[in-house]
Image 1 (cartoon, rainbow over the protein chains, first blue to last red):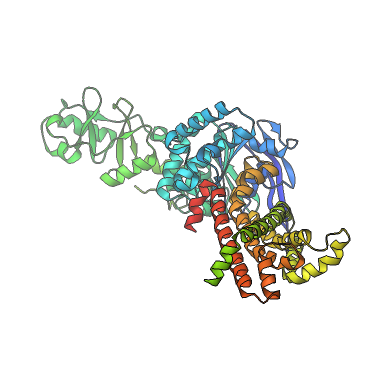
Image 2: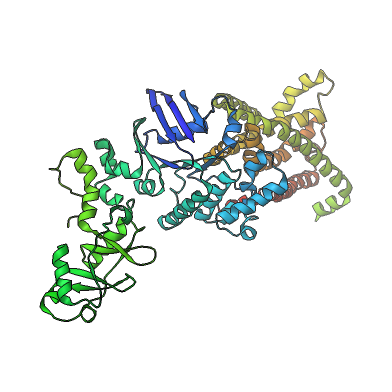
Length: 386
Length: 221
């Protein structure tokens, strides 16, 4: 847990006092990643660096796991906080092993323990210990170096980590890979992390919470979904971008807006029955056919059902696409666009049909928050139209 | 041929003088390194002090060596060492300060700020940062300063023969006073060769002292 209490930084510059961080109050619960974001000079980095006193606070307090850190000796404080910076900052005169074990050494671990720890860390970041431990940072690629940077920060198993644009200098492809690896690691490690980013997409992907800064003030602090769904003011809105409703697609799972009600037919049903069900449920185009295990087997087109006689098993078409309950809406939207569908059957883990998701439901879910705030007359400019 | 024979006839003396010369420069630059490196590190803490110290060191280098010896004769006579070994070592010690202090100061100041921040951020004390990061990274540049000091002062030390410090300069001074070009030229060539050989030896040492992880970077730049 990290708690900031009225944390303030005033820089004295030749042009007068500049307030870099103005009475910042926030709390990051244990095991969560909090992303600090905002335009340059907004105070996000100053706020982060005041936590480990790379920048000395003018006023205010930092609590870690409930304890006030004000009285702690600076070196002790820093050794118990993992720190990762954009420039990585591996020591070029030291081997990878020496870099990783530096904090355990400073903390006085014995040799066997920190050597074992180095190997453990390498396994965690998926680099072969024997191939890398004796090498020097200059022999590694940027992505590998930043993995080592993360390993160094985690080596002494600090409860809290500070990361200053850690993946900013890595090319986009490797960045996505490292982000995913890091999220996977975090699921096991459960560290409390503060993370500065200037990339809203990274923030939405990595953050359990996002703190938006502007001119030294914390403007909004909420979960990514709340941030995108209910930006507090015009600044946050513009910062999130015009396509913020689309960004939410990543955050919402199919499970959240699936309707359990779905009309289906069996292969043994007649097309007459199918036509009746299509009318019953008010489907415009087609109805889903399932087999006896309730797995999607095909679709019966409305026009076929209306004009033809016979059994469903002889007149179905292939199911264009199905979606899982734990997929996100982005995938759902993509499948709908790709196959020209306005609805998709949803399947559970066993592959049996458990409902459907429609474009209308997605639009209304994404739009609900905006309309609640802005009134119904607002054009859903960024939402998907059916 | 005549020169060669002269050198051969006096090989013993040439060797003695060379060893003398190396010892003089070695002792002086050795002491200069022990004082210059700490001074160079200390002045990184304060920009104004640094400028003052570097300015003074530069002024010292502008004093002609022969004048410096002249100034020291009356001063050091007070302790009975107006001429000879002591003023020679002191002069070289003073001349060595500039390259050693300046290179140390520059090298420590030029340590990548990101490394500095990383070292602070992981909780190294100021002394640990110096010992584990800043000095190892500065070693190649500090060594380059020591090399400059040594080569510069092998020349200066040749003049110290005039105040009776010994060394290869004695061949040159005698050659002039006795109008003997053989001594003069053998002395001059010996001083030059010594400077070149010592420079290369120190370059080798510098490479050996450069942290292994950095030698690739150094080679690339």
